[in-house]
Length: 369
Image (cartoon, rainbow, N blue to C red):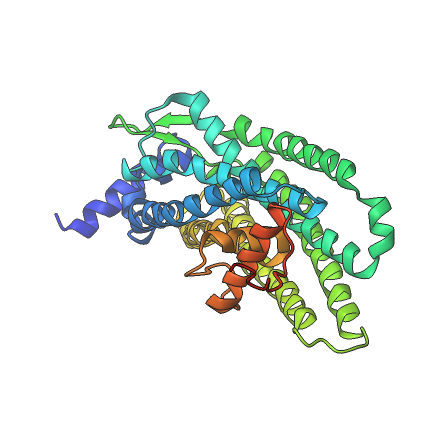
């Protein structure tokens, strides 16, 4: 019997059987050559590369926050929480990498499956929320510098960060409830489900739309408003700008808005499309896989954001950038805008300030005989 005919018979048996269509779809994922290629090779390779590059950058950033920064401003607090959220997300990746390398065979039980799926979702939106509040902080500092000292001090910022962590965790609880483990018929392979790929969309579709509105659309509108008003305020400021500080800041604000939309807009569109296809064609799993392929690729692409956020911290936080550059005097990977001589000068000034010395050392005449 030709292979195509055999594959067709297997397909008919699977999708006309009383088994749940989702588990039939996943358990026979090898019938869709593009999807297993991504699930078994592209995703673990991409996640591994992101972890190799992103985890050292974020851990180094945390080291700078804890041991190098003595004065914490509200911007420092927000950047620290952003780095902590990204680091926590990266620490959850090894479980998913192992899962995909084992050909989608989950061996750690249902509690661990629910925890990994929930924390992955939680840290993902934590990163979005803190990037949004960093944009609000820049907006207040540029457009309302005096009022911002009253509206958002360090104490208020600490309370805000705690509320963001708690709110994001509460919003991620439904992910744990929708996660489940199913053993594929005819094999011992156990699937740790992702709520987006469930065939029953009564819970997943409203939840995904709610997260897309509250966790992406509102933050996107907020970042657009803050970024555009901040850029306009900097453009209308009179006086010379010999060091091009305002121009560089405008570029950073525009780049932040562009990268936010680039990373998160396609992801949410593909995620909702994958769920909507299941709602529209519940009995036709063949129509699901193009949206699933797009969503899976977007999961890989979005993970790059954890490697970019430490560089974003270098641009936004002046104190953080100075301390980070002091660790890499020869290479200066954060900004790439200063030459080695300028970095050495800034490092020397920082050392003098720590020892209570003047940043200018006048020449002392030699009075020795």
